[in-house]
Image (cartoon, rainbow, N blue to C red; front, top):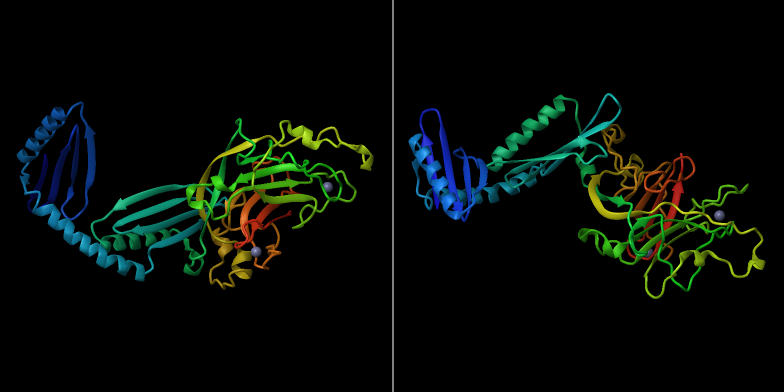
Length: 410
Ligand SMILES: [Zn+2]
Ligand SMILES: [Zn+2]
């Protein structure tokens, strides 16, 4: 059963529609010319759904609604609406209001974001604190003109409240970044994780520092082949691993912060062949005579945090990258708008620099490497790079196996 009713008088012009599909019935109602609201109810049986729908229909007819044949009215209206939509979507694009983002500083020196996006005749508003997930609200309109009017009104309201718009030149440089969602759980040696047990070939020993010869700490590994579907192959495949020297008792500290330093090991490997049954065996030295220092009992390890999922967010470049990398001269102060990248552990996106931007060039092709993973102090790994520093694993956009690591502190 499908019935479409209208009610028109001097005051109102509304419609009411009911559709029965099996044990479900859906009612759509609202002002004529709008999409209206939709309510769906599930009944215990098909006959009950039909009976309830008939009852609702009768009560509407009592309230001065009259039936309009379904084939004529809504389908015709929908067809002309679809045409209108097509015509107007190009108008919207040319007006560049597909996506606009605003920022506002709060009294506590935090930042709020508010952005608006258009998808045909729906308006999607996303808002919250910068660095947090925020909330999304979607609203449907019947025409593009209506969306435009609504958006303009909302934007004016935000500007009146002190919100500053992210300039359109910067909007183009918005990037997605992915936050690891971690859990304490039993995992395999090829799982994406922070701390715990890495995958290590039976043919190799646990990596040691090239400067102080102590065992390196295992920081993290990411199984690039098992990233969210959208990201698969973007960073190649294989296992990305990071080991780093944490020996700070040295009078002459190991220079683990420097890209290509021997005090850390960053690499992409293909985990094939045999692995160690007992990973501690990989740390043992067979012939102690070659060693100038007393072997430590155990370096200990960081607690395992297995990456079980990824959460996507978008971010803008830092002021440093806006000036040095993008060569943009912004009229508004980007740092004041909170247009900075996230400082936590993340995959992709824009780097959060603690000092100057430090991109590394690929040693194969000289191309500038791009951020692959940002590793912060005390996020998923209970360790501080110097004074709350931040580390970056970068990757050549051409040669996915070429990776580098560096960190800088305050
Ligand atoms: Zn060292
Ligand atoms: Zn390269």
